[in-house]
Image (cartoon, rainbow, N blue to C red; front, side):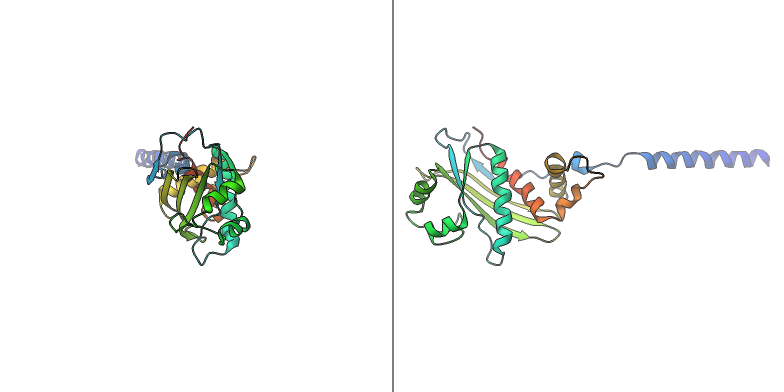
Length: 222
């Protein structure tokens, strides 16, 4: 009887140790291991021409029901991330300036443009190319969603140097992983306690910064 009890106690002890070992194993963080979303619907020239030194960035063209205040926050995110990409000098075209030049506070890359708009923009900004940014999908509430269609157009020739059309849906695990990784790499406050990267999946401005970064990383290199 004593030997039987000793055997049962030994088995129970081994089971407890095994359970404790499993509990102490590090949790896999998919913000570091992936899978990560990589934009695929991109067309671009091999290299950005040396003649493209200044790029005029138009305001984000949103869907009709999006408040302009929301678009303004996206304007800021996209201009900041374009500067971070270091492809060329950015000239920000405000909505007020665009209204004076084109009679509209936003312009989509797929709508008919005023015939003299390119020359007017060149005269006002001395830019060599224009960057259009369109919203094709938008949800500011979790799960966050941004659809981005963007084009870089040479003002002199009218050539499309780069075209991008992708959907970033935080409900997709690969997008969520990539957004969290971006937050950890670039926006995690120094000395912050705990992992705050999940906030990017609830905050439209932070998510917009991730989307802008992922968009402009596909621009042609110098």
